[in-house]
Length: 266
Image (cartoon, rainbow, N blue to C red; front, side):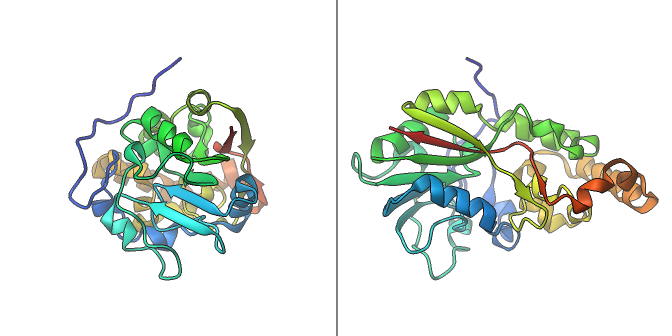
C-alpha cells in the first residue's frame, strides 16, 4: 500500500486550524466562493440515506450539511467556524483524530474536501467509523486523476500539490472497512462550489485571487510562481490560445474530473 506524503505540520495553528493549510490566513473569504453545489449536495444526501443524527467532520463553513436533520459539526479552525450561517449548528472545536463522542453516537457521518487536511488520516477515519452506526460519506478527489486537468498546463505545482495531499481512495476504503462504494461526481458548468475543477469551463475565474485563495493548494506554492502561472493563463486567454485548446469546455454541461464520493457502509 502506498502511503501519501504531505507538507509537514505542527500542532494546531493560531486560529485552531489542525491540518496542513492555515485557514486563519487563507480562509477569510472562503464561504463566498465555496457554496454548496446542489447537484453534489443531492448525491451526499442520497449517500446518507434516512439518517437523522449526522456528524460532519472538518465541517468548515457548513457546505453540504443537510438541512432538516440533526447535524453535529466539528471544525477546528475559528475563522471557518465564524463563517457558518446563522441557520445551522454552531460547530464544535475538535479534530477528526479525537472526536468527543461515544461509540455509535450518530446514524451517519460525512466529510467534504477535508480528509487531505488531517494530520493523521487513518486515526480520523477510524474515529468516524467508531462514532457512526451507519454510512460514512466522504467527498474527496482521486489523486491519480488530479493532474489530468488542463490547469496543469499553467499551474503544475498547484495540481501536483493537490495530487500529493489527497489520500488514495483505496486506502480510505481499507481503513473504513465494510461495504465501500466509490461514485464519480460530475461537476456542473456553473458549479457554485469553487474548487479548482469547478472552473473547468470558466478559466477567467482563476484570475481572481480570492477564488484561488479558496482553493488551499495555491497557498503551498510561492506567490512568485503563482503570479507566473496566472500571467501565462491571462496571456493565453487574451490571445485565444486557451480557447483553441479547451474552448469546447465552455459549453460542456458537466465535467468528469477527479471528484469522487466514497460511501462506506458497515
